[in-house]
Image (cartoon, rainbow over all chains, first blue to last red; front, side, top):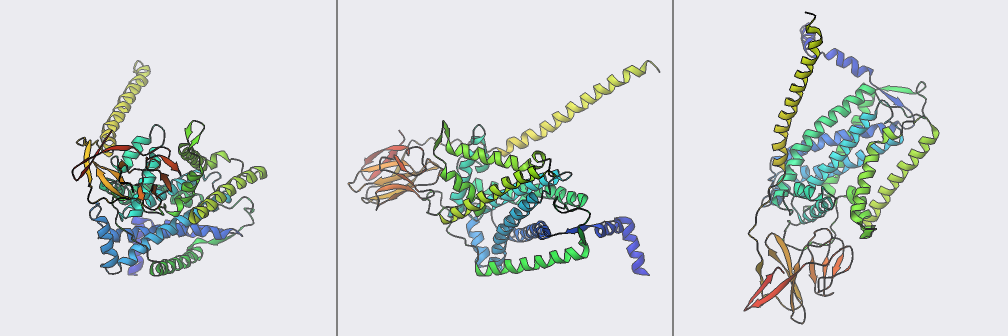
Length: 354
Length: 148
């Protein structure tokens, strides 16, 4: 048997059989909340779509204030299927943030962060922050008016932070103003620094998920929970979800192509309706409601520091909530998580209508 | 041989400290330039104290215009009485660029609906401070704006 010999040859060198054995052992718990297990895989799939379409866009994109807008215009008007690739990249980015939100909140409410999965949670929160940075840096790259002013506002907000504000502002902008230097810098973040960081953090995150297996929520008794094999049963179900996602992306790109807008002009008045991407809206809207002064401090500084503190608490949730078996702690944390979720949803909706 | 016994740990400790500090120093020597590289250099601009912002002939009554004041935007406004005023166009709230509104006869920042009056004073919305005002001189057809 030639193929058998070939198999054996590769197995000796690559250890395929142990990997296959490992994959066969991987199981997904079945209970009434199992539906949420699909969102991590979905986020990963949309991330792969981002990598592929992003690399394709790199073939034509030119990262400078003089050329960026024109090169994106060239992509969507001249390059065959350029409109499709660019729209899919934008839509997939937004859907990825959405599924990431769902994945994060579902693991929170199912207490999947409890021991020994604390570090899985921490790497997950890091991946969330990285994704937000991807979104913020990518938004500027077409160099249109909306993105220009959104970046001006966003980096100016970083600039009001006490002590590090000035440094942050200059570091992000690559100077005192949002200019071509900012664009080059954001391009570097978007296509090199952030992808490299993601590779490492995502690698650890996925490795830990394999190591610890899929968490079963405390409410579902561990012993009596039914299981499904990951290969091929759950994987094939994942695959159906991904095919549906491709369909949705193609439909969105065709029916609602992502707008390019007007080229940014650093010496033109800001147009009305400057809004950040939807996932920043809740913070943006909250800052609007804060008075200019709270006691002796600037309202905005207080708001930003409060959001940073909230983020830190969110990151440390597994270390704060160590008694997930107690009913009381569970209620407290559910109320806290519910409040955070409601706050984000309500503020985002108000931001849209405003 | 026995005399070497108590000596060993201190020699090991010495080597550990030596290696540890050299490793840190090497790391520092590599990371410091990387860090400094990422911080953008201060670009020394020729201090521009005044600029020809517009021509009187192109600026009709009750209009405004954005002009370049070095690397920053400025706003020049000619009121309906013909008076010419100049301000920094950077909104004091979050740095957006403001505009003159001929109908309302005020200055608007469209990002967050900040309104300034024609003296540059913040009258409504989020701006915390008035716009910086510049001095205006008309020489012939040139409107010259000067930092005060």
